[in-house]
Length: 256
Image (cartoon, one colour):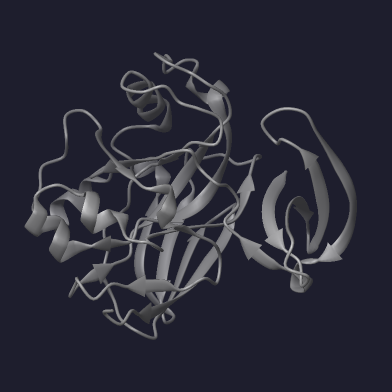
């Protein structure tokens, strides 16, 4: 099933479910009890929002060996975790804003895992029981600031640096799904989720050994090789087979 969030022409935001090109309202919490209304609106009638408002966004660095090599970095022996702030989240078609502090902002196409329930010290064998579904993410990064600072909060944390969408897919096999990223129609990234260094099960287990996972938390699973610069006027299309396509234009921000 696919769950999404959307805004009607009236400006009201809603949670819904989608089948083909039709949307129905969802009442209640998708992580608890909820009721689905009949399909009544077309996708074309609404503006899609980020499909989830995460409590926290846990990210994994260098989880594809080719990406580590393109930055002349070693593959970590254990998952390399960092966080992005929830204020970085945007939805489909919302612009990625290039901050004036950076001279090089890059795209990073990723599979994002949505956590379904609270958990701590989760074993790899139980990890998939804590997965609600999956969505597409773009771990937008101010690369020059990331390298300059030596830690990643600023380079990864600007507003609009976490596009998510277009929906949450609950019936998805993450073991061998194709991830691609196109910029202005040009292929930049292409790999399979089978190329991850650490599996989703191991990532959930490791993250939960550090912090309690909560319903609605997002675990971003790392990006393949091929990351590249974004400039004003670009259109980024991040796609995962079996989920869909997340599109975001790119705009510059003027320094105040």
